[in-house]
Image (cartoon, rainbow, N blue to C red; front, side, top):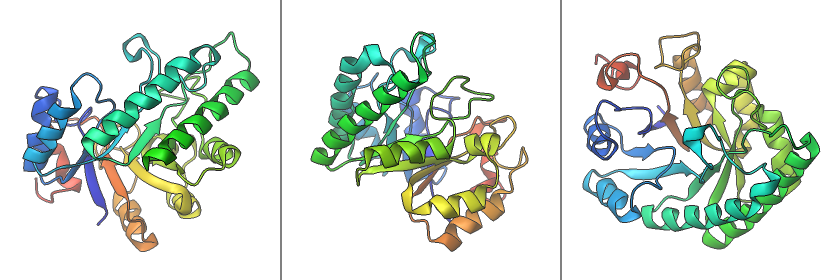
Length: 259
């Protein structure tokens, strides 16, 4: 089976965030990710990781004002300095938490800027982040998010666009974060797609579709998908990033048979 991690922004939400580390460890996870660490001191998060024997595997760069609907600022021409400050903040947290991969959310294309302006800004920002990450020994991940259901207007909504960006930046430490749920919505053909993209995939996330709930609630054959990842020799983390349709522990049948 793949190496599974728990996304604490979406799993174990029955308890406050800082209590989710213990719940994840008790459920058998040995690694965690979450959307953003910035509300808490890195020292506090590191202590929770250490106390529960957990490895931090991923978080996102600062996204702008998430609560007001922003979904990343990397493509925004008028937010370049804020993006660069966020890169430095992300590096500082990565050092404190011991993880080596951070995801960059491209963002929603603003109506006042052309596609060309947004794309050019995204390329320049990702190049800047890649250079700074290389100095810090970090990998920068780029994620395609579906624009049909979850994030209309998200600039990177297919693996093709992410690969175009990776090619434009041409840096050894820039890789694809493949989200099974988002790519089922946008592209399908999951196993063949992951096989073709495997050399560039540094991290995988999953949820079933439709609904973005746990495996077994939708159309994706996760037994086949997980077996394919083993067959392909994928050695990275595979993170559960779904909304449990029941109490989290009761949703873990895909992970803990019989629960």
